[in-house]
Amino acid sequence: MRRLIGALAATLALDAATKALSSALLAGREVKLGWLVELKLTRNDGMALGLFSGNQAAGVLLPVAVILCGWLLMRRYRTTAFTQTACGLVLGGFLGNFLQRLYQGWVLDMIYFPFLPWFVCNVADIAICAGVTLMAASLLFRPQDWKEAKDDAKDNGGGPGGVTP
Image 1: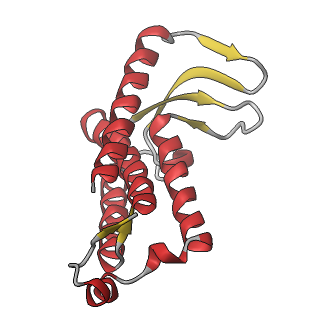
Image 2: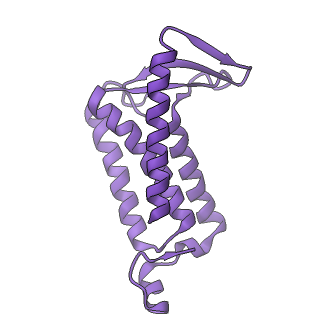
Image 3: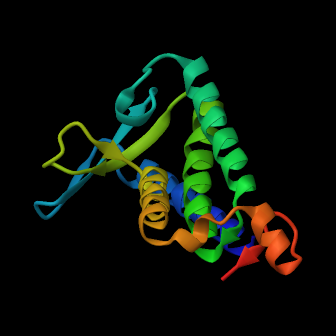
């Protein structure tokens, strides 16, 4: 559980810091970092890729539904350090954007990739993508991560959701 909390806290802190710094340093400016990345402020009142733009109910209810589904899924399986890290990144990213959307009605995006003209993101978005990628890698290449918690409890006398390395 420490890895999940650590990844979640690090993601929230890094996301909040980059949003605060970007607001202070990028107001009215664009910064090109070579040909690969640009920094520019964008307010996104939708969700990923601007979906559901202007629909505040969807902006609140969908993330809560996704986190609830993830929690129910992870209760069924034992958690490993790998899956805890992945879940911490996803939860930290969701919370970083969710809290900003809840309090301000929009999310600040600032990282722009010119070769993906439809995509402007922030650290929370990157953490979500990284966590989902780790979870997909776990499903494909780490079957030991997907042992049911009740089977684990029978095998070694542990309780549900026991942590294994």
